[in-house]
Image 1 (tube, rainbow, N blue to C red):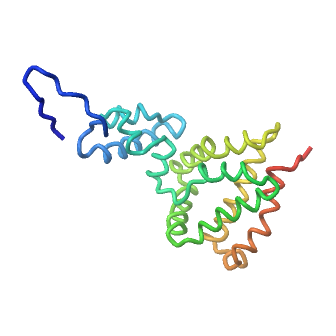
Image 2: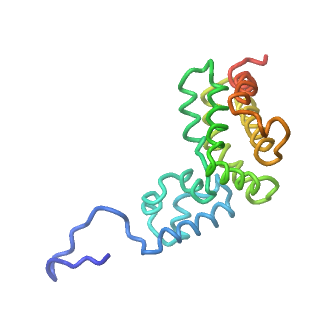
Image 3: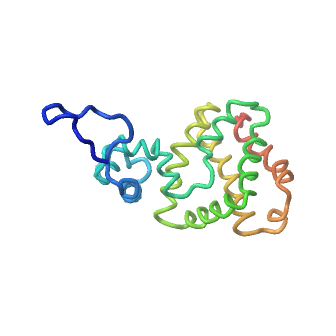
Length: 207
């Protein structure tokens, strides 16, 4: 958008709003971010480096996408944001945390669009030498570290990862492998079965 000065000698007043970057800036940011994540991994990629590669101001990257986690989720087509939603569950009733997490993930996956995109993401991530470490880095930094901090203890990192493995295993068994029983069980039944296991990982002391 061009700005006409009010006079030849007076500079144009600075306007507030979206930082400049060109009409194709958003597409260039997505391309640059994809390349940065592929090259440096989730932890190695920075918003500043993405902006530099895209040829835009870093403020424009934040304007379009918010945080690095938001940008990554956009690129991979994340069907849900456990990094945002599960920490909120951690602030609620700890006695029913396992059921809450199981109900959240499985309940969302029953939505057709979430299921479609989630299955595609799982298929792409499993065994893909580029996608697997990227997704693992995102989950480790943005989700598991928050759970670890919330539950505390010397083995908190292990317990958080075990809880995540329980959820991931059920998603693969139900929506990709379609294992008998799991594939057809009502969500409420699955929550009753796996909720206590997740609860034990997150809140019980194994020592």
